Length: 345
Image (tube, rainbow, N blue to C red; front, side, top):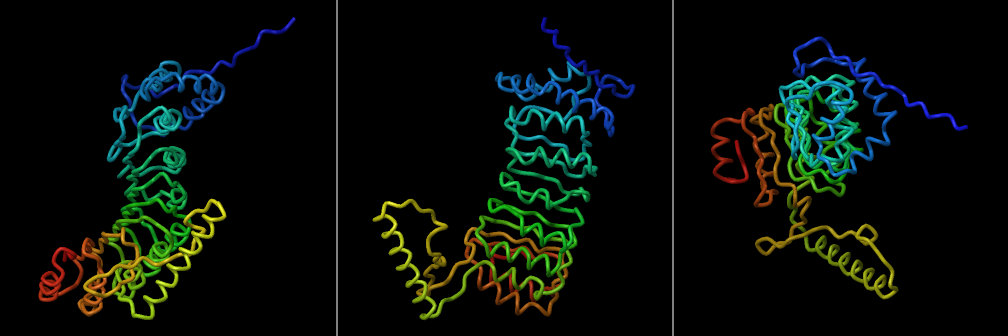
């Protein structure tokens, strides 16, 4: 006779004695109990998620079964905002478990002083669905664990004590779908800016970068970055080379089409982007990149001529912010008059 299957009994999570409201705690012991419950009931929980119920419905049902309180910032919708409001490991584990049942696209963790245990769960959350991540002023964050998550298009990393040494591997691993990167209020200087320039020299869709309040003290430190976008006037010889590449690419496409072979753009000869401006041809680098914030650094008055030359490379829709550096008032007035909408200084 077949023995009846014995179901594992999972104890309710024991929260500290408190009023029937959520309160922040590390909850390390309770997290172990929750993870045990999720492991033993993963099939039922998966079936529950396919039932069509909402994100918060799932969480409420689970908390009814195991005991516990709902974080006051937890809700249905496209955004969860935990800035200046501590979030615990239990809440994070619930988000991770039921994120596929949500419409979540934006999470704000600013000023949370997240622990490593909390961050490990967050890395699991943000690799799904999240388009915009605010994780500023959390110095324990490991930016290299975030770099590969191609779903994130807008990434805010201000005030995380990020160094040049951290940025080099970050940009080596950073996916190509990022549109905005905010790195203000960190410890970045020349080598970090060079790593960003190398990223911009590869295929990307980056539109805006914030580098305010860093350790940038001269134009030399941002020179490679400044020459990784904008326009460069082409000589007749250089333009002829580009035209030759265009002809080779077209011949390549015709040959593949005639042979009825499938191809992608990556397989074709690369032709630099160019544009005719005022009867001259210019090579255009990263035309989508249109905003750079270098405010509150220490760029000196001695760099005014280098800055002036750099500004001539900018496309019409580009904006660079240089407020609160070390330029004299006369220099700021001259540059402001000359470059108008391109410059905030």
